Image (cartoon, rainbow, N blue to C red; front, side):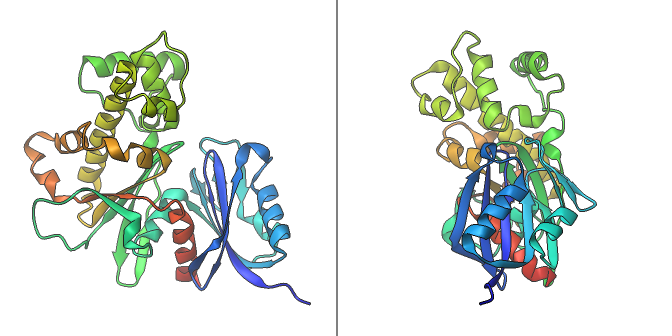
Length: 316
């Protein structure tokens, strides 16, 4: 008896990898499985295990990776894995294999998610917005990145970037002290050294150099009880507002800004109290201009898989 044939989609993050099946451009949520990267030597071993467990054949792959993609090769930014289209084609027999930056996959998910998957952060207060025009997805998780989304009729283009590795914007003496602190530990200080899971941990160490190491979850759990946690969270939200505001002026995403990633979701209760809007809009004579951009949080943890499935349908 021949095996059933499916398309396969995957979202490879710095910590975990999700794998699922898709049919006719639609993610099959009941097939999603999560794998911890540290338990595997590479993505191919995860793929082989998943396919063997499902006892299926694969005709197409769409893989979202947390890292740059060039010439059919993806290099993970926060993981020592190299992923190549040629190897995936050879190991699975798939006729089509696509590699996407994970933020590109998030961009392709826009319009394919349930409305309940979007949590409003900032509503536009200027102009009549109808969600048209350029959109921007911003990922905050193990790393940081963003990608603009351009729609041309039925076609969609999501441009890759590595903007998490541009210089951290500094605006006061506290920022410069933080920069010196991070420089001693990391050398070059990019945005991701603050706006990521490890970034929050570094902000806490900066706020209380004599403290024991705490995880990001522990730091957020201590907000309101520990002054160092309060300071770290305030710094995080201020830098996030500043950086996302810079990206908004760069790309003019009148169609909306969409935050995604585990760290962004964990911070959602703090955006209002800790002044995300104030930092986002703090652009001098362009402060009022910033009120035109709606900002939402993607709460769907499977959004990159949904986007990968939509991309397969677009390419078929």
